Image (cartoon, rainbow, N blue to C red):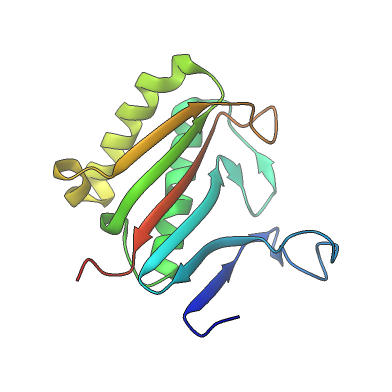
Length: 147
């Protein structure tokens, strides 16, 4: 591992998602990876990482849980939500698109006011997600510093 790359591991139920908790042939799981000034945040969804369960079937609630995970990962990497520059949002149902954008805007107003005026580049796709109860998943690219 290069000195310029830092992994921030993911945890489920208090256990790090890496060997020995994940079989050696499985990939290493990370909430985020920092390479230089770039932060890559992956796979944030509406699952409670402490109980390892999806505890709500309300789209907006899963979206906020996923955005909270993004915010935590950005802060853990020494940055903030204001430094998100690209999002990829995966939806289970196209009908959730208006709710996704409304929830995203409300979240930015509260936690990332800069993104209200300067929104990140964004892609969304309708796909089958990893678990049937997942309604949304978010991947993000951010920067540690805009300087």
